[in-house]
Amino acid sequence: MAELILDSVTKRYGPITAVADVNFDIADGEFFTLVGPSGCGKSTTLSMIAGLNDPSEGTIRLGAEQFVDTAQGLNIPTERRNLGMVFQSYALWPHMSVAQNLAVPLKLRRIGRRERARRIEEALHQVGLEGMAARYPHELSGGQQQRVALARALVYRPRLLLLDEPLSNLDAKLRDRARAWLKQLQREVGITTIYVTHDQVEALSLSDRIAVLDMGRVAQVGTPHEIYAHPADPGVAAFVGRMNFLPGRVQALRGGLAEVMLEAAPGPLHIPVQDPDLSPGQKVTVAIRSEKLELVAPGAPAPAGEQLSLTLRGKAYVGARFEYELGLGDQVLHAESEANLPGPQVDVILPAEACLLFPAP
Ligand SMILES: Nc1ncnc2c1ncn2[C@@H]1O[C@H](COP(=O)(O)OP(=O)(O)OP(=O)(O)O)[C@@H](O)[C@H]1O
Image (cartoon, rainbow, N blue to C red; front, side):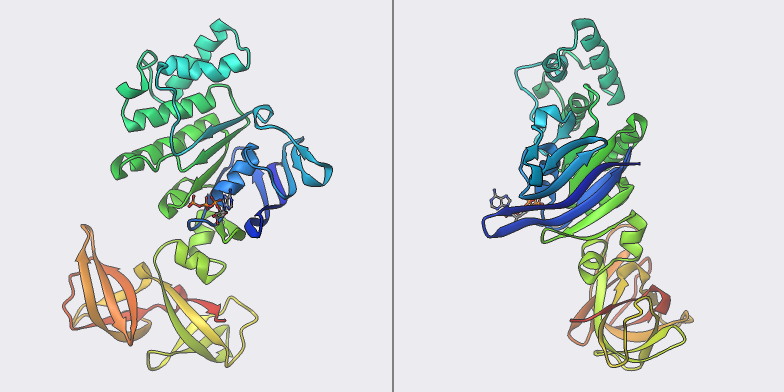
């Protein structure tokens, strides 16, 4: 059963359309992430679900409860939506202890003293902060403060958890740990969660499903694997992971394969066709992820696939592997390999099954 439904939700600020006709069905217990470049409408969408921002058009419903119906002039205020929210700034009250911070939303809901104490203890246990109830925010690390903010959002058992870049204030190592911990907590609590981030790794690793937004519109909704392996368009492909794009033209179509001539390389590629609307003569973009390019060490037998000889432009050692910048005409391709390959030329195989084809404008 779909739990949260956004239907044709639009938000305009004068001539600016921040969110354009967004539709989602988010299932009960799902971890659903809104991702996309800066300004694409993630926070505006989240704030409309939260009731902090009024949609210009559309409906928002949680289970049987209608939050918003612009046609009827209905807009339930945020305090009656019973949502948990954590934003980038944790907004803990500095003059209150951890327990007092957690007590605030419970007092607002008129929960009695004994039940309050029980729930605060339970919430602190959920976030792994037992024994910290008497501390003040300035006596906690950034990661601990972030856990208190989450505990405060969970303590009154909201129906939805809304998180807007909650990990972005943590340093890289702490963020990795917080990510794993957050995912586990969400599973344990089983709460429907909507998460906003511009960090594709966070989106891929945390989510059951991801919506990629682009200029206020939903470019694609899918599981992390669908978004990564079958991006709907070059914009999604470019945003998630590191993708190389090569312009070309379809020469012929036969046996489920497109024969594509690249602008910058001799010899055609034979690429499996997913788009039934492709036609011979059409301009296309061939997309291939950096990790799918296979670099051939000098003298080693070449694996199957179309082989290109590229110019070594740059190489960086990043621990487990080397990252390469390789020139093909005036284009730069990104590739990676555990091998430390010499220049000036590097042989590269493009496995046809790893190439995606998009119609070019
Ligand atoms: N109050 C406002 N008045 C006018 N335009 C606004 C207002 N709030 C947001 N916008 C515009 O709406 C668009 C979407 O903004 P939003 O904050 O939702 O983007 P975002 O995807 O969350 O970006 P970021 O990742 O940078 O936080 C942007 O173009 C922004 O400039």
